[in-house]
Structure formats: C-alpha cells, structure tokens
Length: 72
Image 1: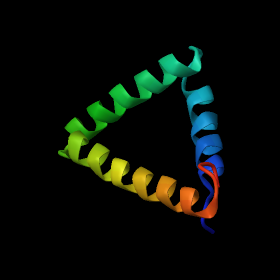
Image 2: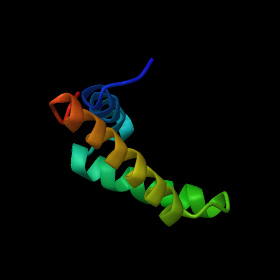
Image 3: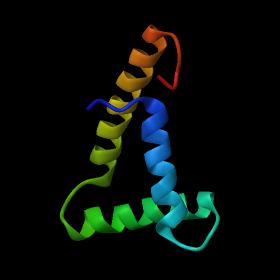
Image 4: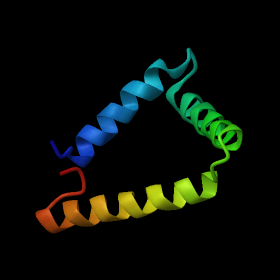
C-alpha cells in the first residue's frame, strides 16, 4: 500500500510523540542525533542517508503537487 504524504507525516508524528517525554521538536532533534549515532556505529554515512531521504521527499512532494495537493 502506498502511503499519502499526510499518512507519512502522521506516522512520523506518532514516532516523535513517543520518542521521549520532551516536546515534539526536541524529540525530533534527539531522534535525528541518535540516528547519526546509529549510522556512525553501523558504518553508514548519515549524510548519504539524508541525501537519499531528500530525494524521496522531493519525489513524494512532486507527485502530490501533480495530483493537486502537497499532502496527497
């Protein structure tokens, strides 16, 4: 099943809300820093992962725009 961008956002929001007892923005920052640590410990390049994520995001936003909205 292909998720909509709204569903992707909601899925991420659930993860952020449960990551720790801090506010969502702090949780997101902590999760990203922890993801950097995870990449470092697992010999992966966080910048490369982030670049790939940006490509995915750009495609998903473009597809939504073509269908008439940014959250489709």
